Length: 221
Image (tube, rainbow, N blue to C red; front, side, top):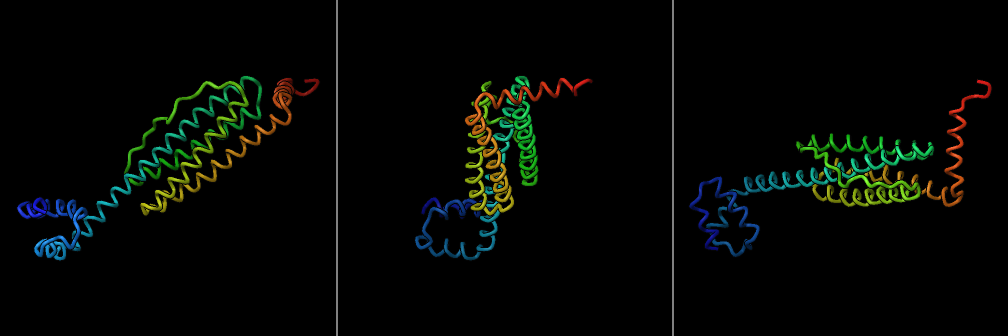
């Protein structure tokens, strides 16, 4: 309590801040009469000070979570475009287009997240959460993509709950919307994995054959 009482020698504004920092660690009933009186007389200021301080902390937490999502989405964009290039090179048009469409949708997610960060007066971090992995096998591509989507859905669920605890309803809603998108993406990749399991390499061969037909043009041309 000696350190707490020394605060009366500080300036009024500094005294408030130091008192706030200490009061959270001291039982009200252990304060002396002068300290209790100080707390009662400055109740409104202290409440406003605590509220503004907490709001700043909560806003910073939301910005942190939103930037983590940006990093994950950017990694997905790069990874899916990498898969698109290799599927396209092998003539697997259906899968190439699937990865390209998913990459575009992840870019839209980045845009939504960035807009929210800017609204909260934060800085957008465009760093990828992980580098692109050189995967060439189609089955491994789909397996990896499905795992990425599942991981993102789990993270966004947790981050939506954190935003709710921090009284950030808008960020919470955004994360919940992203969860739905990621689960849909996961299902699409898993459906393609099932097609591979069901039809084997013929599933890929048919895609290559279809491209050859399209490239050859109509008969008699």
